[in-house]
Image 1: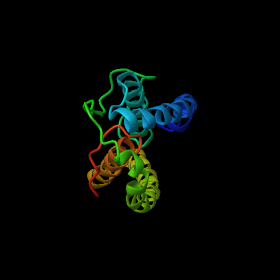
Image 2: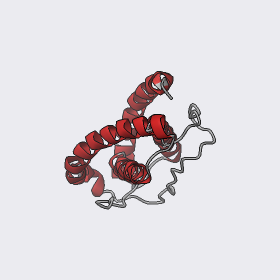
Image 3: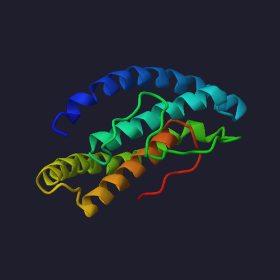
Length: 164
């Protein structure tokens, strides 16, 4: 537990490169959705793999899971599921970035608080051997919200994320 920050370094490095690739995929998918109303299935699968991997690493880094996350695809207790959309709105692709702004204004301060909560949880786990339920639920809620906004922002769904 003391060296968890060091253990995630290989994941962070790999995810940095994958996020560069994900940006290229997003650019290609943006045009594909604009002209065809569809997200290319292979690109969608790649995007979901990167976001699932990120969710696994975040859960591990926030002390919500003790198992070391797998690289790429792999079995992990964190669930991150989304159905492949058969059709996406062609006009929404033009404004999704704007619709994410209200979420970002609320999420960024919450992510800061989440980092503080993770530090408090770490001390609690160290001293008492358990993650306080309220802090765990808060961490899970922030992560769920963050991931819902992420899949919307990366154009993987048209479902506007709720503010919760």
